[in-house]
Amino acid sequence: MYDPINQPSAGTPLNDLNIIPPPPPPRQQGQRDRRLDFWRGLCLIDMVLVHLVYAPANVQFGDWLGLKLIGAYTRFAAGGFIFISGLSIGVIFLPRARQDRYRPGVYRALWRRSIFILAVQYVSAMGLLLLDTARSTGVASVNPWAMIRDVFLLRQGGDLLPFYVFMIALSPFLLEIVRRSWGWIAVVAGSLCLFAWGTHHPWFLAPAADQKFPPVLWQVIFIMGLIFGVAYPYYNALARRWKILAATISWVVFALLFDSEYSSDFGLPHIHLWMSFAKVPLSNGEALRYLSMIFGIATTTDLLWRFIAPTGFAAFVETLGRKSLPVYVAHLWVVEGMGFLAAACVSMGRWQIIFAPAAVLILWLFALLLDVYKAPKARPQPASWSIPEMARG
Image (tube, rainbow, N blue to C red; front, side, top):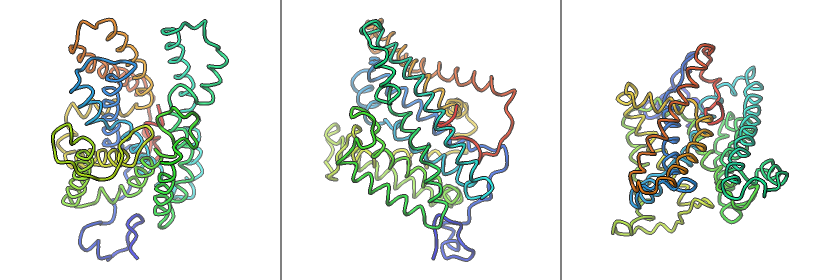
């Protein structure tokens, strides 16, 4: 029987049709898949724009550009980051996890990284909460022990990084399953069942009921990214016409979902899909919208990669993506700073849009400094041993 995830045997009918040829040999030591950095960088840029539109920044972009185009129609950062993180686990760690001699080290590396991200969450959350408290009520009016307790228990300070802590700590168990024949089917089935159950119990496993990324729901996007990572060598080996078909299907699905959610904004005929669209808690329609959009972006940019890769734009975006964890933490502070400027410069009106490229440029300079700082002592490592960037600094 043909297994679309594990290495196909010679002479299978699908191989003869050149639909899914054997995957290429593993990349050589020191090589790095630039597309992963590029996709992470795109997610960071979108996240900055969305967070500038909404609180705490509330930068004035205008209703259509800000609330509609950036804040609703084109936003993909949250689902994109989570999908690419799962993809990175499959692309980077699974090849080593398939080898007995490397497997224990792979799993220990993932658990260490999970602990590191948890420490980053604690430090970042405390700093931002102290800033917010001092700005609104004054530090003296706050019970410091209650604040420390809530941060330690992940009740305050944001829950995106805690979601990564949870999923990266779970990744060794997921890899143990998907490295086995047809294990990916069990993972997908379990993920979908958990998501279906979570739509009725969204705050199960969530430290607080007011958080945006309850694990029981958002795990499905991470898992779909992981499964794409498992199949990534086969996707790379596809003939161009099949990649075009994959991208087309993704955008058609996205268009149907977009029409179902936003048709009234454009006077278009409404397509009834009987789905709900909500980010908090994540609904079935919104999860599919995230998945179709980020998969469409990934497949389309992959098709155009030979034109994109040599450009300065690609280099700019990849610089952000290579340092996604520190850039993510830094963006929280940059957004706070831009919000302070927006409140102080209300008279600028929609000219506050210039804060968006300024924020992205600041973060790019920060990422570039990190590159320069680490460059002299960096040593080439196997791409399959690298830590996925949302899980490393």
